[in-house]
Length: 120
Image (cartoon, rainbow, N blue to C red):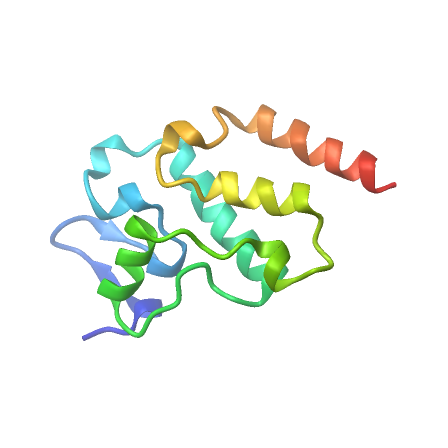
């Protein structure tokens, strides 16, 4: 068995690193759109801001089940230096259902700009 950081399945068309894959990538890949990339961005920001993966695991199945069924710990709990607003932004990117993520990048950028202004 591959470790989660090396997983790729060629016969089913599933490619990626499970730690950063959206829940929908484990199912019907015909339903993928830009919001799947937003989820992966959220998983990356989670790791960069906390030093922890949102859904660690020792197997692909364990990681996949985390993406599908668990809620990650709020980033500001793991890193108290993060603002609640930034923590909420990351969790919105990690929403299980694509319709609960940002509808497009302009909305995400606007929230990031508001965070930057409020920090200054």
